[in-house]
Image (cartoon, rainbow, N blue to C red; front, side, top):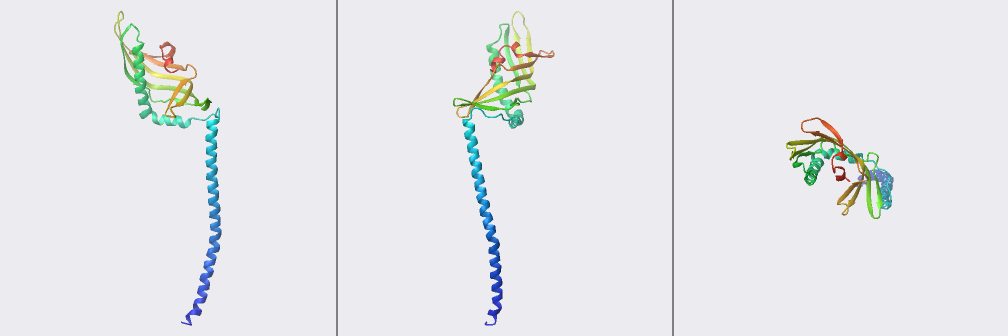
Length: 229
């Protein structure tokens, strides 16, 4: 037993030396990790302060800089075929049918909306940029609206009364609308109202019966422009 103790002393010294070297290596690592954690926390705090500042500037600034809307147009393009188009077509079909019957000329005995589809191409927003302004406590978004819709299928059937008699079909197969649009959130952001700054430029591609197609300005089709303004 007494002979074993002197043999263990060098081993213990080596272990103590290794342990000391380990602590010497871990100490700088611990200091570095502490500094990195502090830098990370300061960076997070700076980002939070910047976000709060940007939000405050957004709410207090009378006019915001122009922003691009590629993301919104891309979203509309993806959601248009299976979501936006069916819902808008159903809603607009109800509006158009009601107004057609309200403004039916005396020469037309009966008028019906048989089909209504807005085509495969969604409108484009903010091609020249979008900005927000403040009017009192109300935020208003200013953006452009460009819509060249092809593949449109709006079929209207009309039965003519005396003295003309007979039937007629009117097909709207393309829509062009261009103007400057105002959007205003209401009801705490749950909905919004819109209006064009002025009467937009509108053209409709119209085919009568089985004949060809021709493009007519909206002013030649009673009430079309007033539906949008």
